[in-house]
Length: 145
Image (cartoon, rainbow, N blue to C red; front, side):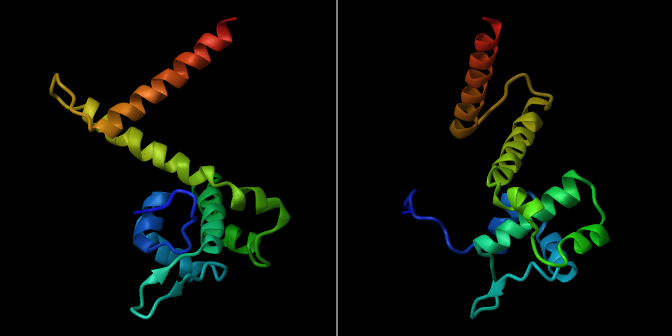
């Protein structure tokens, strides 16, 4: 059983792929393109990503996917490591949470756009949807005064 207060030290490529909503082959491609991203491999040859690697991936994800920079531009920006200017991105763990939200929303939306009149959600999806609606309601209620 996972203990919520003990941070995870190593992540597999599968876990990182899910965290950042990227295909595994894209992560491997980024390894070839950016010398700063070099996950270790365990005895079995399986990539193991550390927090350092996640920091690099956060920067790559934002620069490549959100700011639409080219690989050459990003390679140049990261030539001397993560600069002070990019540190806030590297330390922003909400990036993974944003992509997890996006994945959940996509799954729920796919269910809602089906042709059936009835939508079946898992308990976790329903609770998450209700919690999101509650936050929206609180926000709208708070902004009316």
